Length: 218
Image (cartoon, rainbow, N blue to C red; front, side):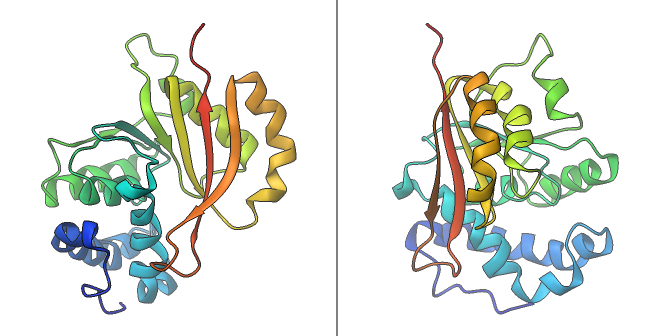
């Protein structure tokens, strides 16, 4: 595993360093053993995974409001959800993961990292969760490399409260998915669907995002 970049971490992320180190070690061991992280990813866990996720939570980016309730759809190895929880202690996270093995992994890691008061793991399909009568819409919904954009919108947007935001981490080729996703976004009441990047000077390549807002109820 690459050397943890303590000196090069942004100042706002420095307090999260011990937790990020612990999470990196879990990903490099148990995460690989359970097939959540490929063995070839171990040498770049910090640059490609932890920091790639962390830069999105930078308060200076204004993407995730203070004290927000955030849902991470298809959380898998806990990316970006657990990274955001470590980076931003003001946030509350719901990690949504339908597969039992992955949900059990997340539950164990939440306990090992001492995040029980901040993070909840829910084993359910995202498209079913929004239909539950007791579901309260979240402020922000995210996902990382889960599905093509058109399908991803259908899974994530219904989880948002009116006026809530989608902040999805995607590959740099996501622009090719926009045409198919645009009518889906319109049908779901999404405004301002756009692509952006963040993390300049911290990660290379920078993190590519899909951003959108769910129209507020009239």
